[in-house]
Length: 185
Image (cartoon, rainbow, N blue to C red; front, side):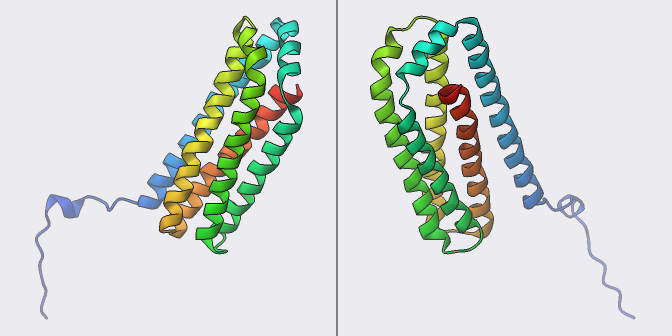
């Protein structure tokens, strides 16, 4: 009987890293931290609206609700493309379509900012500042994750497609929290 002995180094003694579990944990930490941050900002907006209802009324009159509705439909449609990519239905074109929908959302938000700017810039208080912070921060997320969608579309691997689609859906969900609090509230 021949028994082969092998020397073990310190590297052999360490358990192999599990990329799946570690990356998944980081993804969920990101998702929940984003919900906490936006939740705190939206909570502050609600409190400021209760404290200063006249400022909230002025802000609501300045907002373009139909344009916000079109932007919402655009963003949610792009989320449908991200979902299709996740389930293996031509990931590359679906990721590109999701990104283009996100960029169209950004264009619509920039147009709406142009309409809102004169009224909101003339307002005093924290409410318009919170509005710009919340919607601007969300816009930055859409731009960044839209760019990530394009990067992943370059060489779509199932794990990366699922990860970027999850973050994209996070951006969608955050907008679905922003819409009723700011635009419909």
